[in-house]
Length: 68
Image (cartoon, rainbow, N blue to C red; front, top):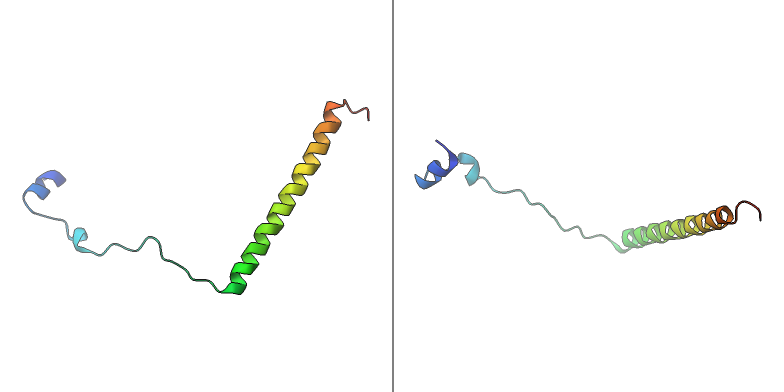
């Protein structure tokens, strides 16, 4: 039988009776962990900003035809 026929005959697979596992579980973090994560994010933003500035300088140098 196909699933539709089983359903119409009120025959359900055993797996339907099992509890579904929780997909998302909230995690409460302490203040020091949150501050450390925030510091990592700030450092990453600073690093990306520095790379962006460096790439802008390289592009300016490239567009000038390597003559500066």
